[in-house]
Length: 296
Image (cartoon, rainbow, N blue to C red; front, side):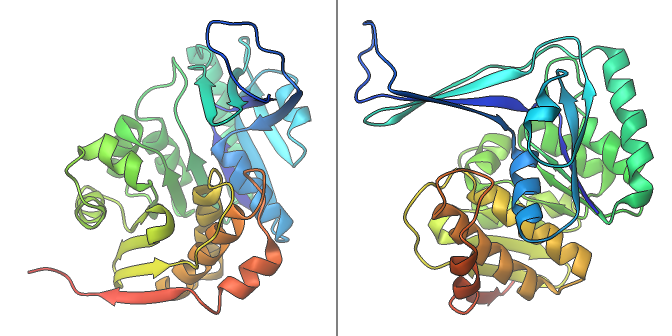
């Protein structure tokens, strides 16, 4: 079983309207609400591909029931945040910070997390941390996981602190890497720094430019075929493929091939957490794999 951890999930609210007029009354044509969060997106992709998954996290009582997949969320007193997308001529995002988590709620989550570990083949930890959860939360969970492989998709302090626990893989995207180490940091240099600071492997997604990986088996770049559509869930699909590779013990070339192919297939789907499976299979034959040389 693959466990996904989403400590700061959200009700994803989408408003669709013909045009957005700031400062005026706007009539919404369509509203959609869905239980969301990066870890849930990963779980949905894996579940659709036939893998056994369970989504863990911190959420209000009704959130887990609305997720639509196997889940065991630790209940909190506060209300789960909302992320609101206003879709008109362009997309405007309004993201709430999340409820304040008490020390007791964080302790309860850790206890629940420990109880799931004997059944886990890998753990994916994704997204931001809500107020009240310590900045080293992912490091704490990775240490608790012990020999169970851990994959961390985060940025900033949450990512940097996680490196102390030597996670098996970290996977920020290029923008998250820049926000963590500074705008001047290249994808290649950032991946190398992540490994120097403790990650056993670092994979950085860079949109249509593909995935750059710094691993014990060498440096790789995997470039997917061009895809038009919604890129929101592409990184989560790449994480799902990395988790599949870790569990199946694929080598890095095969893992990255699947990660690039699945991320491009996710772009063709309207919602994060979905992927066009026919496109995924077709993409596997056309992903460009480039082994790279380390700079002296």
